[in-house]
Image (spheres, rainbow, N blue to C red):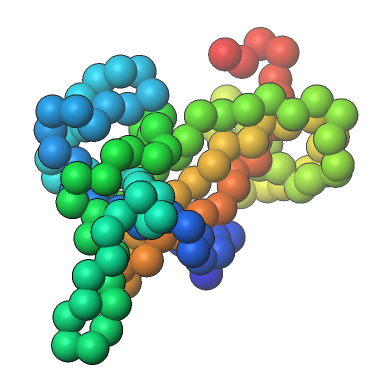
Amino acid sequence: MLHDGVQCRLSPKLGYRMADGKTDVDINGDVVKTNYIVLVNIKDCPVEENNGHLYYNPDGAKQAVLIDHGGTYYGYGKSKKVLNGTGKYVRILVDGVLSAQRELRFSYWKTPYYCVRDGKVYRGNCYKEIRENAQ
């Protein structure tokens, strides 16, 4: 599935719930707003039956992934600097703006991307070039 230009795949181990506004935090330690999602491990959720179908109940499950920044139904995890990795076509900066243009790089930033669609969690990765003068 393609979501916001990121190729995503279904994550069978992750579920989601809405943030509680008290104990759920982002990567900086700030409380997550109640209209944002929080990712949880499905194995930590109790299974309930409804009309002959089994469902996981995410209420009360602890947060599994800390989100760096995002929106109501998507989020980015912590970026990781990959040096001398396998070659990837990554987005590059053109005149200080991240463009759709891609070039082959062996060192790049790798950022996990999570989104929720139709009640399921999808995961992908974003790749961006490393610039010496960029923060």
